[in-house]
Image (tube, rainbow, N blue to C red):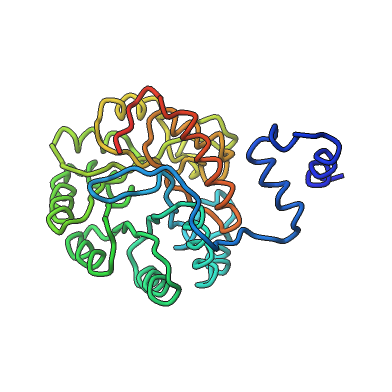
Amino acid sequence: MDRRDFLRKSVAVSVGTAAAMSIEEQILLAHAEQPGAKPAPAGAPKPFPRGKIGDVEISRMICGGNLISGYAHSRDLIYMSSFLKHYFTDEKIFDTFRLCEANGINTAMLKLDDDTIRIVKAYWHEQGGNIQWIAQITNQDDLLGEVGRALDNGAVGVFTTGQMGDVLVKKGRVDLLAKTVETIKAQGAIAGVSCHNIQAIVECEKAGVKTDFYMKTFHHLDYWSAGPKERNDSVFEETPEKTIEVMKTLDKPWVAFKVLAAGAIPPRNGFEFAIKNGADFLCVGMFDFQVEEDAALAKDVIEKHKDRLRPWHA
């Protein structure tokens, strides 16, 4: 007997069992009762907690763009990025966005490139979608040009990629990040700096960079393939305790990403660690079939930790 059969039979013999189930089990049971069914995005979106960065209202879970862009931290699975590009056809991306909106997720963080611009515009103008786009820029040789291109194509905000934040800070070029942030804000959009190394945020704060938000990798290290980075490319957060200490002193919104360590950490576990320890938003890369469950789990975790130690800054 598989888990779906077990759940179905258990409900039949136990009055009130569904109410006692975890969210994961309730969602699994619903799918067991309707084999092959996927959530219909018809009707009003489900309510989902939101916060504000600047004047932009953003769901506390954000759809990540790495899956759509074909970037995958796949450990030793060399085919994974190619698989993602084949899986995420235009229609599958539209399905994912529709499911996000149906479950109250109103924002996606997506890499600035020709394909993203084409897909987002098609979703808005041909599919009737409304998801907001915050653009990730990656070309440090044309930062200001990329800002203009992102905003000209409808992005509500722009942030520098995590690798760029780490590299520019290490090179002592925080001034480039500051100039980029100033340019974004001068055009009425929200501006962020992303990083993997918490020292990048420390140095930006020292230099007085006026970001609207920071985006920082964040997860615990209790999973099978954790570090060190020299031998394992699946490390995204090497110093979670230091990240907690630094971020609790800042009054800026914090978007946590890589919270599931590329699928090595179960969703409830990863979401709870990030939210409990101070993240204001979760940026999560999701397949379409994961959206409903991830949204339900995140909503439950956010409600559970609404009175956490670090105040909500968005």
